[in-house]
Length: 195
Image 1 (tube, rainbow, N blue to C red):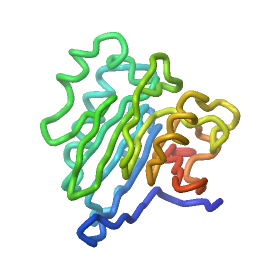
Image 2 (cartoon, helix red, strand yellow):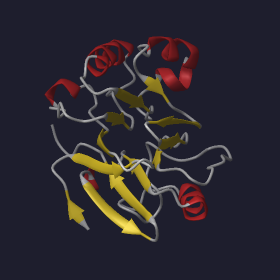
Image 3 (tube, rainbow, N blue to C red):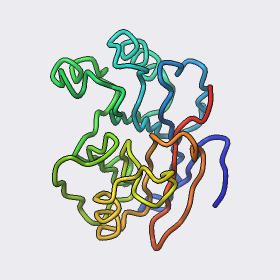
Image 4 (cartoon, rainbow, N blue to C red):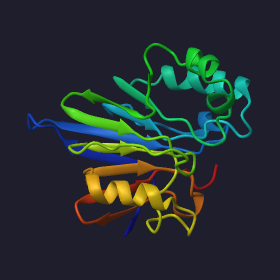
């Protein structure tokens, strides 16, 4: 297991090109205290932009996130991003055009296949995770992996079956900034430990 100051991840695309990802989660309204490197291709936010579901915090977060210089920006909601739970159509309308909202869906960017499952912080409905995913993004952690005994067993089973190359998640502050490899999957906890 290694500890990271940031979740800077380097992947190789099918064409052999390197793609730099920066992943973060759990800023809880303090996103403007984060410095995102300017030389990354994709920034991934794995949930909890808000402290208590405040739509004004979400509006400010999206203004900050949309202005980041990365070419691709992916957003997955967390359990504190309550508008996505209680007013999903309204919340989705807040997402800027240059930000990709992912939930129970996937997107391929520069040859890298991203997919997200709704784990806030546990899965409440049966979901499907396709094979061939390069980067799985969830808010909650899989059981037994950097989860401080709070992870989702259903998610762990799905990941074990589909074997994505990488799994980025947040929610568990205690193990934020850490990564661990199991089988063919590299697990990255992108939660910000302290701000």
